Length: 244
Ligand SMILES: [Fe+2]
Image (tube, rainbow, N blue to C red; front, side, top):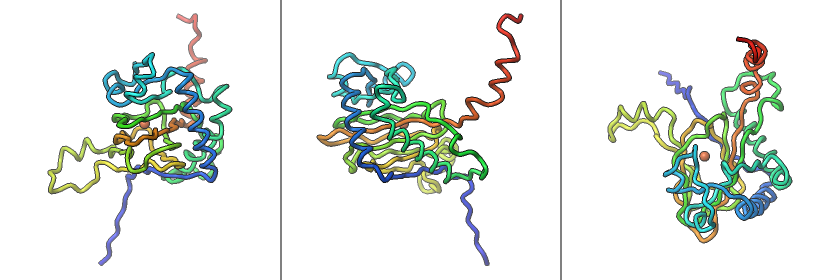
């Protein structure tokens, strides 16, 4: 008798610690402090959920950040531009390397692809979680691969939890005594490490507990062809602006 087991439809989530992680964590901690002081951002925890990601609440007082947590997400500030690029460029470089390693672990089947020009980072932000803070369940829209890098954390709390993309299907079919598949997958917030995952995968965190803040750097990667493919050029040249 023989038995063969296949796992054909996996959704990898990888963890990677770059060699220069100590430099990256200190840059992130410094950058986060400057952002929180200089840039009005969004709030997290229940305040984030109450308004939604499309029109995030941007408080005018530091007390709100202390109450709910802080994020430079949707602040209008780009960490890819000056003056922030000076601090964050090594983090961006590491993030690209992390995404590259993610692609390598998928069933990607184009050995001749120009991997250096395969894609680009299209968004990045920093979030600061105080005692009791968390991020509600969400996906990263308009992108393909996403990451989080931990600059500071109490590794005993604030775990990130991913939800199986097919959960809405099998959740309807099984009782508690016949659960064949994991619905969620939990990973600890390891300081100095990236976690990389597909952008469509829903995720959230447990509450962070501790006197020290949890500080993260997150962002998104898109495949270049989806942004600059032939279809875009075709539509731009096919119809002139004044053509009826
Ligand atoms: Fe996220």
